[in-house]
Image 1 (tube, rainbow, N blue to C red):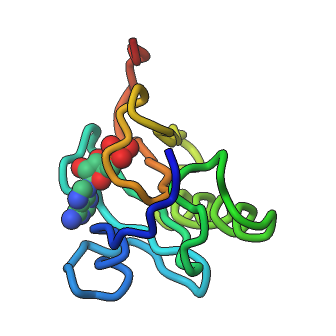
Image 2: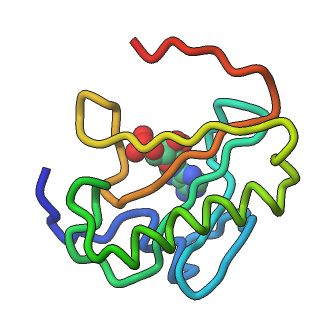
Length: 119
Ligand code: AMP
C-alpha cells in the first residue's frame, strides 16, 4: 500500500470536520471511540503529525512520531483505568489484515475477556 495522501475520515476527525467522541488528545495524538465497537471499550489512537507515508506502521515517518503514538496508547489506557484489567492493541496493516482506513491507527480494545481468533 502506498500513501496516496488522500484525505481520509481520520484527517477529517483531526480537523474537526467530522465529529468523534474524543477520549484523549495532546499535541501528538488523538484518541476517539470507534464508531463500530468490537469490545465494550474500543478506542482508536492516531498520530496528529502531518501525513507522510503514515498510512501503515511499517511505512511510518520518524522514530519520535512512533514513540509519541505508543506513549499516546499508554496515556489512553491510564486515563481509562485499564492498568489493572489490561487491554489489547492492534494495528491492521494492508488489505489482508482488514485495514479499511488508509491512515495509521492503533485499535485499543478492553472491557471484557477478549477472545483470540483473528483467522
Ligand atoms: P481498520 O479497519 O483497521 O482500518 O480500522 C478502521 C476503523 O475505523 C474501523 O474499526 C471503523 O469502525 C472505524 N471508523 C470508521 N469511521 C469512523 C468514524 N467516523 N469515527 C470513528 N471510527 C470510525
